[in-house]
Amino acid sequence: MITIKDIAKLTGVTPAAVSQVLNNKGRVSAQKRKEILELCKKHNYRPNYAAKSLQGKKTKVIGIITNFFGNAFFGEIVKGIENIALQNNYVLLFGDSRECNERESMYVDTFIERQVDGIIMYPTFSYEFEQSIRKMNAHGIPFVLVDKHSANQPANFVACDDLTGGYIATTHLIKKGHKKIGFLGGPPCSTIDNRYKGYKKALEENGLVIDQKMISNFEITNKQNIIDGYPPASKILSEKLHPTALFVTTDEAIPGVMKAIRQLKLKVPEGVALVGYGNMPLLNNEDMAITTVNYPQVEVGEKSANMLIDTIENTKDDKELNQVFIKPDLIVRESCG
Image 1: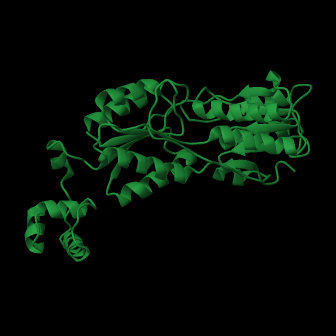
Image 2: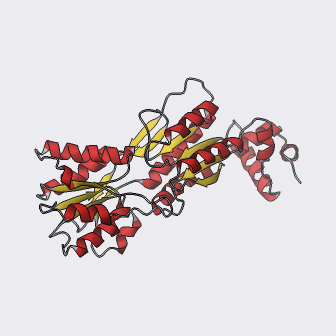
Image 3: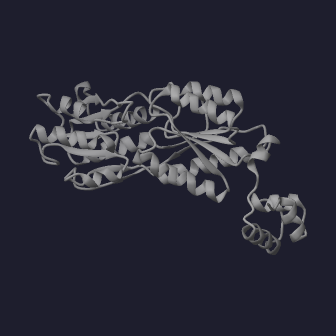
């Protein structure tokens, strides 16, 4: 089996120079870099990252903690993460929390034991993931949170600007003439909390009263990760003075919301207008094209991977927190008239 020393000897450089080329670093000339890469490809040479790990060096492995791996929403984020990881010669190791804090904590432990270079974590709902943040900080492992974050445990994160998202969704409904706008939220977390803040801001700016009867939350089942919009939608649409429009804080709840609307013999948008959140592919399966806030999933994934790799490769001690909000936009379709 060919070694890095063999590659160095064949190309007339030091093993350190070969290592720099393979890690896209150093000041090796373009011609020599090309020669080294072609020789590595010819002999199918791969760096021995296990040996590097034993030497206390980088393993070039990033641990990813998902929340139900089959979820289409996170799948798009993973695309973005993988795009950047491959460009920088990192491989990904996955763990699925399945909306369970114990599993989430277990994967943090596992990734630390496996000596991954860093972790990207899509946290569970509620704020119990704060204990995982404390654990990663205690072990000094670089990490980035995706989508959700916590003011109580400051950390690097990349998220959608959900306050702006909630604001533009609600403002659109107000401009369509709606004054009774329902809010379908979910378990406590930064994403839902900020979408509610945007909803509230839009109502207050337009002199509209926040009616608690117009607010209802969906629940998430741990076994299947099903976000069922039917119970909360049915509840508030059954009120005598029901809302004429709904801001649904995740597109995953839309099928259940549509079921409730049909059972109550209402029509979209005449009886009730809808704005979703996420711009997920499942909306294509609905009879009505749903207006939704576009969540830039791939961009969130790419920025989180870039942020983590920068943190891993930046050896300075005075690292400042890097917290990025990406602006969403509204995709207007038929569900608001």
